[in-house]
Image 1: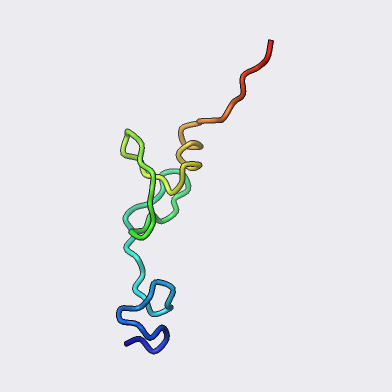
Image 2 (image 1 turned 180 degrees about the vertical axis):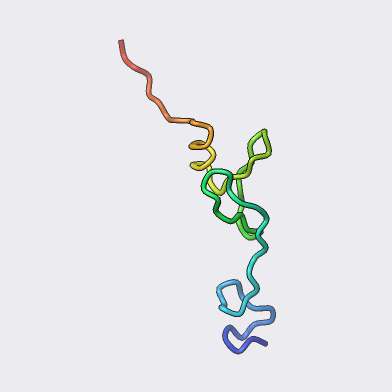
Length: 68
């Protein structure tokens, strides 16, 4: 039993908890993609930490229709 969190295995917030496995890196910002978080993948198999990074990488912007 852990002396800090009093659990076996340690709770994820415990400083003694094992670090989650790094599964890859965001293609846009190079942030770690860890096994304890979801990620985004495009049709080219590029992986991203967020939808915002994927949109920025692909140059996707939100637009409004112009009125006549």
